[in-house]
Image 1 (cartoon, protein in one colour):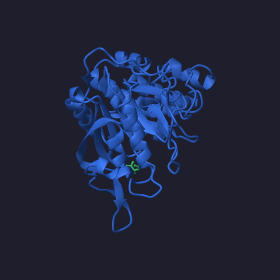
Image 2 (cartoon, helix red, strand yellow; image 1 turned 45 degrees about the vertical axis):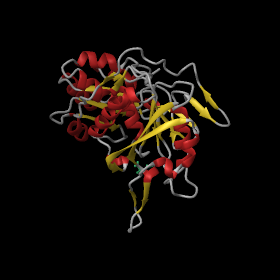
Image 3 (cartoon, helix red, strand yellow; image 1 turned 90 degrees about the vertical axis):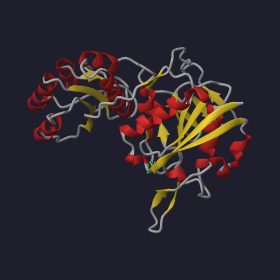
Image 4 (spheres, protein in one colour; image 1 turned 120 degrees about the vertical axis):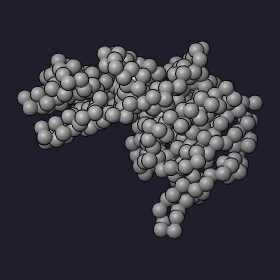
Amino acid sequence: MKKILIIYTGGTIGMQHDKKGSLVPFDFGKVNEQVPELNHLGCKLTHHAFSKLIDSSNVTPAFWVELAQTIEKNYSKFDGFVILHGTDTMSYSASALSFMLENLAKPVIFTGSQLPLGAIRTDAKRNLISAVEIAAGKVLVPEVCIYFSHRLFRGNRSEKFNSAMFEAFQSPNCPPLANVGVNVDYNHDIIAKPSKKKLIVHTKLETSIGLFRLFPGISDVWLKNILNMPSLKAIVMATYGSGNAPNDAAFIKTLSGAIKKGLIVINVSQCSGGSVTQGKYATSKHLEEMGVVDGADLNAEAALTKLMVLLGQYPNDAKKVKKLMTTSLCGEMS
Ligand code: ASP
């Protein structure tokens, strides 16, 4: 019988209305008392609740470290992990964990819900039941994933794209690892193989980094203020379409000046699907020439968290960080 650890961190799935009518986390207790169906999945479930339950808008890198260490501490005792987490930053957390847990050989599946577990039309039950079923299933998915509304996504490819529909997540640049209907249909061709090496947990994260979106009318003053922040090590720049940006003299001078001073700039697209291709248009050739790193089809969540982990590992080796940013480490880019 497989052993699964359910880690409860907070989020709508375990929230209730307070006196003022706002949703706040409540003490989840033993989740299989609330969802008795879990007792019939043929696996042994153990629960671990974080001491402070949070709305995932309060997620921090320190929270990811706690999560990664909880998995590390329990890694040999369990066959898989299901993490109950708020949906708002679930893609960031799943991306971060995918880079922090190197040589993964067991499933780590995030799930949550749009409606609390106690709500009549809740999506929490079926998300939780299917996530546990997959974590304990015969088909091994040794990846950090998100299970949501009938699809299993690679975590570092996913994004929350809808705040109102049950189908809240998508992964346009990578097909789902599994589709759940009457059967669970796995996409065997793209599911990673379990690592034979020992799990390495990276807990040093560089947080002096940033993320911004270009917008028509972006001023040089605005850009200078962002890029010249004293301790900033790296920034993810969400550009237009296939990686395009203004190519006027002021923009070029400010961005290339920051790069010359050592700032790492990663180009990802504001589009959810498709890829950055620096040099395709004249409006991205200058980025290539000044040393902006082409993020290809990395999404912003993956780019940001990958940078945090790599800069934590190689704080003084910008060349290595830039090279690894263009290399797929755990399926985050095509
Ligand atoms: N604000 C909530 C959270 O991310 C939303 C959710 O769980 O769906 O924690």
